[in-house]
Length: 93
Image (tube, rainbow, N blue to C red):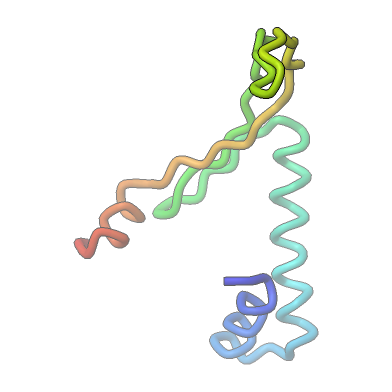
């Protein structure tokens, strides 16, 4: 599913115009992005949790040369689905 598909579904299910539906989807994504950039957790009941985690600097190896390299620290985004979502995906409720 793409962003355009999301906008189309919002348009069909709510009765808003396509322009309003696009603004709604964009606003939701912007809010999520802004909160994640601040390091805040997003918890959507019945769907799951989005969490930004820090990965420490670590040693790695270049697979082509075998040389050791340092992999810099960074932030990663993780998603953990809720039990409700897991059940829906697996055909249960």
